[in-house]
Image (cartoon, rainbow, N blue to C red; front, side, top):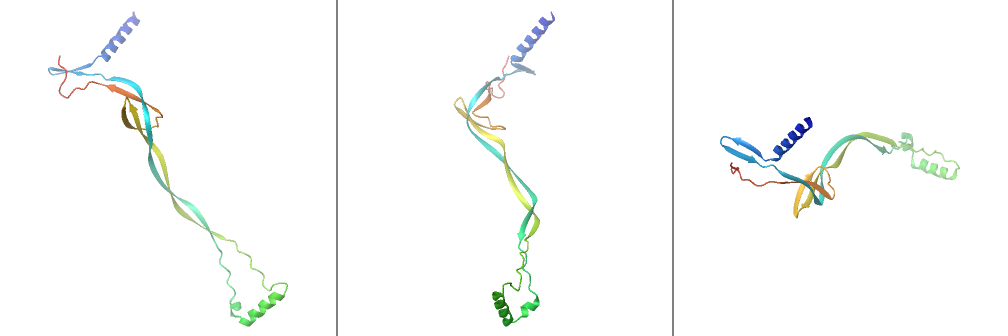
Amino acid sequence: MGLLNRTLAALCFMALASAPAVARSAGSTTVLQVENVKLDYAHVLSVEPVYQTLRASRTEMHCEEVAPARPVPPPEQEKEGRWSRLVDSVKGAFSEEPDELPTPALPAKQECRMVPVKREFRRPIAYDVDYVYKGMQYRSRLAEDPGNRLRIRVSVMPYVPDGAGARP
């Protein structure tokens, strides 16, 4: 018995849910039409991503090599005359060992500082989708790329102008 009562209750509920809703107000009755809905597929023509541009900046260490300064000769050598320099150069040409040792190359110094670096990132946030359903072309903005087919919800209802409600 319990199963039969539950089945009858479920059938009554389904019958009431599928019937048009009736709203009663002072002296008039308005019938609210239930939507006729089905799911179908539309053919996708094109998909264009919509990008968001993000800008960020951060500081990074930037190092450059700086050439070392040349050593300054002592003031005594600058005051020598032309003759002493000439004699020293001739003497150096004929002797096996030069009078002056070559100065070793000084290692290059690195000069580092913090530099702001700006970057831009683009990421897709939506997709503008053009699609065709039953010969009509539509465009929608979607959160994901649908691929070649787009599942759509088709709803059909009769048009009822405002103020023209159904009368009993």
